[in-house]
Length: 163
Figure (tube, rainbow, N blue to C red):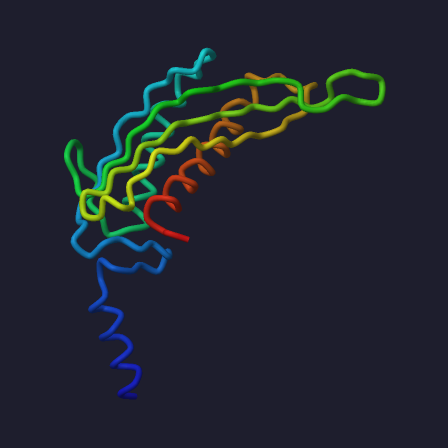
């Protein structure tokens, strides 16, 4: 019984340095800001910038004890959408396009004001293949949601999970 009480007390006392999501955040980091990601891609999806920014803010808010703020923060995420493209990904046996690929690339800058050694600038790319016979505009939203989710996970893992 005392071991269980000790284990619970130990877990409670570690708040800020570890979370059950695997995040490893400096104990003195209390805030994070996520700037809006401007869209500089030659082909622009008008919802992509807001969706990426909102989903990333929600991920940090739900998976860490950090307060998401505007402006200066202990941890700062900014970036831009650099590419949004769709192209043929596979041909059928009669040389017709059977699959297309939607690809999104973003450039991310992460600043850790508590530990500057953890700063990084990196591009992340994710894609989804889809049946070329489908109307792209009818499936674009679901493809973008899946890609954005993976991009957010990539940024989150690189910035606070340290795996």
